[in-house]
Length: 585
Image 1 (cartoon, rainbow, N blue to C red):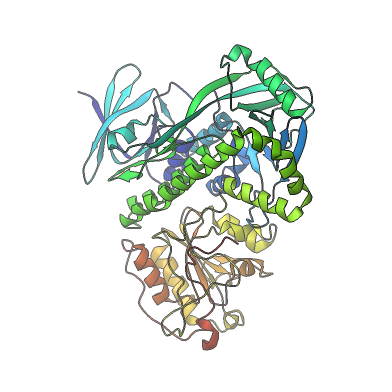
Image 2: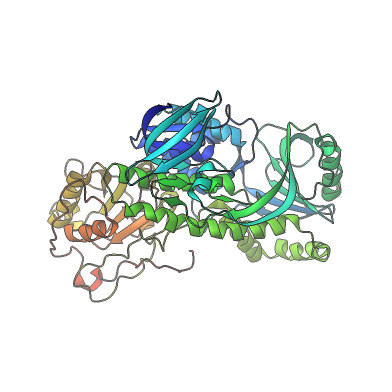
C-alpha cells in the first residue's frame, strides 16, 4: 500500500508560478508541500523579462533585490528595418506611477533561483522527481497520488491542491478543464554571445524586409536572447550563421552570432481554460493558459495569478474569510487571461510583420512617430502599459465595493479628485513621491501579509480633541481583527492611535486623495477594495460583511454612527463609486 502523508496545501510544479504560490502560502503560516516531476531545477530559460507590476509583487514578497541584482534594467524598445533605425521608444510611466519604471531582463533560471532561496528561508524545499499522477476530492480534502522517479507511490491528503504544473498539466486534465484556442507559428529562441555595436540598453526589433527578429540584452556582457519568427532551417548547427546574416541585413551593420548556449524551436499556442478552479483544486500559470512569447507575459501573468490565489486561500484556510472569497480568483483572473490572449495575438502580428507592403511603409510611418512627440509618447505609453501589468485592475471584481458615503448622504459618493478608486492598485500612490516619508511607509506596509485599513486623522484629533468615533473604530478594528487586518493611522500619534504611519508633509494623503477622517481598505495584494468618507464602526461593518471578512474571528463591529468631523455639506461628495469602466488615468 502507498504511504500516506498530510499537508495543508500541495503545490504541483516548482517553476516560478509554483514557487510564488508556495512562498506566499508559507509566508502566511500554512504547511506547504512543493513537488515537481522534473529531476531538478530547469537549466534553460523560456522567460527573460520581469515587468514592473511583477517587480512590485516581488517587493511585496520581500525578494525584489535578489532579482534586480541578477538582471539588467531595460528602458527602451528600438526598431530597425532594412538597415535603417526607425524609432527608439523610451520607457514612459508618467501615467502609470511605479517604483520600478523599467523591465528587468533576467534569465528565468535566475528568477527561479531567487524564488527557491526565498522559499527555502520559509522552510519549503521542492521535492524533485515527484509527479502528481491523480487525485480525488470531496467537500473537505483532496487525496493526491504522488509517484516518484523510482516508481514508489504515496497518497498525500491535503486541504487544497494548486496545479502549477505547466502546459501539459495533469491537474488541469484530471479536472476536465479544456484548453481552448489555436496553434500558431513556429519560432526559434536562442541564447548566444553576439558581437555587435548596438548598446545593450534596449530591446531591439529588427526587420529584414521579409521577416522580423528580436534581440534582448542579458546582464552578462555580450550575451543576448535572440528570437527568429521564421527560422526556416531549424537545426541548431546553422543557427549562428542564419542569425548573423539576418540581423546584419536588418541592422545595416555587421553582427556576428556565436555558438548558442541553448536553442529551442517550438510551435506556440494561444489557449486558455474557461475557469481556474473546481472545489478544492486550482490551476495557475501555463496550466491555465499558454500563448505567444511575443510580449513576455507568460511568467509574469502566472506569478500574478499565484499571488492572487495564495492570499485568498490563506485567508479562507485560516478562517479569516468565507469560501466565497475563492470564487473571486476565477472572476478576476479568467478575464485577464482572455484579454492576454488578445493582446499577445496582436503583439505576435506586430513582431512577425510578414506583410511586405506594410513593411515598405514602416520608414514613413515611424518618421512621423519620431517627429511628433505627442504621438510618440502615446505609443510609448500604450506599448508599455500593455506589457507592464500596471494597468491591470479589479474594478469589476466581487471584492470591489462602491465607496461608502455613509447613511444620510444626500448624493452618491463621487470619484475623488485624486488617488485610487476601488479596484485600482495602491502602489501607484507609493511611487508618486519616492523618498517622502509617507509614500515610503506605504511601500513598507504593502509588504504585510494582511489586509490594511488605513485612515486619516481629523484636524481636531491632531489639535488634541480626538474624534472619538474614528479613534474608537480604528482601535476596535485592530483589537478584533488584528490577526488578518493591519490598522494604520495616517500621521497618527504614537501611543494614542493604532499603527501610526508617518506622513509629515501630507504627500501620501495627497496621493491617496484622503480627506480628513477618510479611510481605505487595501487587499493583501495591494489593490484597493473599498474607501469611505469617514471611519466608523458601521461603515467598516458594512464593508466587511459584504466581503465576508472577519466573521470567524470575533463579533463584528457594532452598528453605530456619530457626527462627522467634516462639514455635512461636503461629507457626502468626497469619494467615488467603483468607477467601473472609467478610462485609465
